[in-house]
Length: 310
Ligand code: KG4
Ligand code: ZN
Image 1 (cartoon, rainbow, N blue to C red):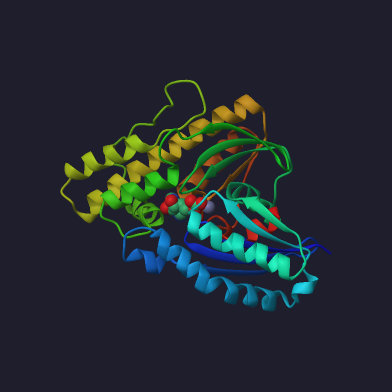
Image 2: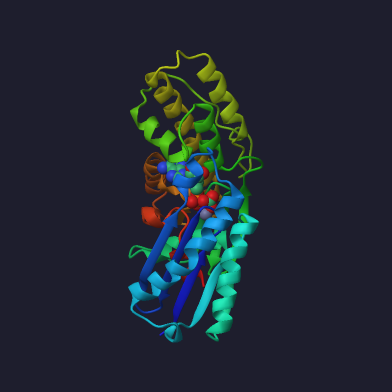
C-alpha cells in the first residue's frame, strides 16, 4: 500500500507525517518555532532555517518510529516546494531529495497552498469534488474553484495583505503578543458590540478580489482614539474580526452563486477562526450546501497535508 512521507518547512513549523493510502495519517510530528521567534515579534527567516536544520532529521526518525515502519516500506517522499521562506524551504527540499536519493524513492515537490487546500480530505466528513475553496493563510487569501484533484482555477485573491497578515499586523498595532492572529481572535471573543463598524473592503463593487490592508490603518485610528483599556481593545478587536469575517463571507457567497458549487472548503491558518467558521456554516446552510474544514491541528502548517498531497 502506498505510503508517503511528507515534509513541511515553508515557515516556522517543522512538520513531518506519513500518509498511508489505506490507513490515512499513521504518524504526525510537528515542531513549532513560535517561542523562538516570539522574542523578536515575528519570524526571523535565518533563525527559522537554522532551526529546521536542527529539528528535521530527529523528527523524520520519530515519525518513522511512530508509524512503526522502516524507510524501505515508503513509496515516496513529498516536500513543500513553495511558496515560503527560501532558506526554510531549502532545508525541507534538500533533506527530502537526499533521503529519496539514499532510499531509492521518488521525491515530489508540493505547492504549499495545494497542501492546505487538500487538508480537509484527511477528515471523515470530507467533500466530494467539485467544490469551492477559500484559502486563508498568513501569506494568501484565495478563492479557488476546484473541479477535481489538480484542477484548480483561482477566481479571487487579495490585492494587498492576506487575511492572516491583516490579523497579525493589526495585533501588532494593538500591542498584542506574537503570534498576533489567534491572540487577537481570542480578545475579540471578549469584546462587546458597541456599534463600531469597520469597512468591508471591496464589497461595494463586483468581483471576487479582496483588500485587507486598509483595515489595519482603520484599527490604528480606533486605537489612537481609545482610552487604551483592555475593554476598548477587545471591542476594537471584535469590530475588526467582524469586518474580516463578513468580507470573506460576502465574497464566498458571490463565488458560490457564480460557480454553482454546493460545497465550500475553508483551509489555511485563519480557518481556525471560530467566528469565521460560524459565519460560513450559516452561509452554506442558507445556500443548502455544506462547509468543510480541516481539524484545527491541520489548519496551520503541518506535514500531514503535504504527505496527503504527495
Ligand atoms: O497557514 P498558516 O499556518 O501559515 C501560512 O501558510 O501562512 O497560517 C498562519 C496565519 C497567521 O497569519 C495567523 O495569525 C493566522 O493564520 N491564524 C488566525 C487564527 N489562527 C491562526 N487568524 C485568525 N484567527 C485565528 N484563530
Ligand atoms: Zn501555510
